[in-house]
Length: 151
Image (cartoon, rainbow, N blue to C red; front, side, top):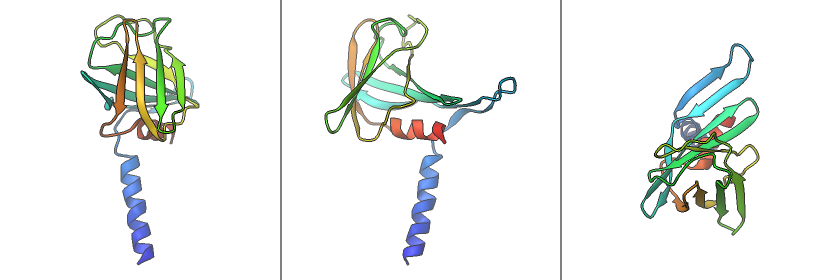
């Protein structure tokens, strides 16, 4: 019975790890560098909308592209940042590395190669106009999105 339950658990884990859709999954034929990009998914609920994100892996670097359903300013501005708040009270803050884009619903990008997304509670995204906070929720967590591009 234990073997059957273990087998079912492994199958469920395999399906949940591969449920996120990759929009790009291949190797650049010029450089040989592997590229993986997930579709964009809702990852946090704000008071007046939601945050959406996709994970990217190019070679050994992992990045997170994140935006909001509300216009919060330009991506890539020098004062832009994202702060992750964990259940135990820890925070991690990263600078926006996107090119400057002032279109409506601009997407910021952050290098998350060394960020652990387990036990993430809230996200604060600051684009050029003002910061917005979101409570982590959605079909897939940031942990799941980043994990699928790392493997």
